Length: 386
Image (cartoon, rainbow, N blue to C red):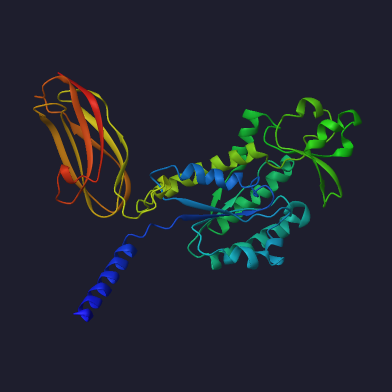
């Protein structure tokens, strides 16, 4: 008997384990950012903003953004320094890799027209070999260099994307447009030596000052416009073009705009971004329908949902009081995953007019009815007229 009980418990354990594995949440989509100081992200602002926006979207899987940029880096030095092998290659499986180099290359790898494409191709070859399942996306530089320098670099980046059969994210014009809208100095850091600040104003600047080792001097660094009224005439006050938090926010939202449509094509990803840690999830996230209808009218009902396995999705309209007269009902079997669907339904012509109808959406176990519903959304006070 004891042996039989032990065997039963073992089988139960194996079955439970299999069940857990079957409903293991989908892994997050992993996005890697590599590049120079314009990609570093302002203490995490760049990558966390991307995550915060995408992970609120119920039609995509969650994302994890890893920022592995380094100030002063080039497409050459990231490989030759050993940093690629030590820090980037070990990061593991990636789904998307955004690469932005070229600013430092323009003055560190002269002649840049000869060295930059060669250096970039070596880096691209390593990325293709080490991250075979990743979509590698070359990104143009932001407006940092003089116009001619930016054009030279970005032209080479675009040509490399074509030659290597890679996607191109042309962020340069988007950033430029942001500067035109918000002001040419709205999205860059102010970074000048304290010694360049007039003596009478140095106490104002001192809270924003720290010793910078590579500059070998005390530097004033400001990421906002708050000191512009005082220091706008200081030589070099607007010279530094590194993004400030506003610049990184713009880079983040444009990156989201670029990648979100790609993520929405993945209908199998559960919307873990809504904080649903369990894989065994059945939920209606969004439900929209008009509340003023006419008999004989066709109306759209849009539903965003997630299902842990094959389920029934039922939509019905009925009077929201006795005798609970039904108006319309439809049932559809849905697959595992998340999706947004629009159902175009027609209100029967013989529907009695009234203002106390309701539209209901349910997720149900297959073959079950309303008492067994797993989730429900409804719209009350629906008016139907002749």
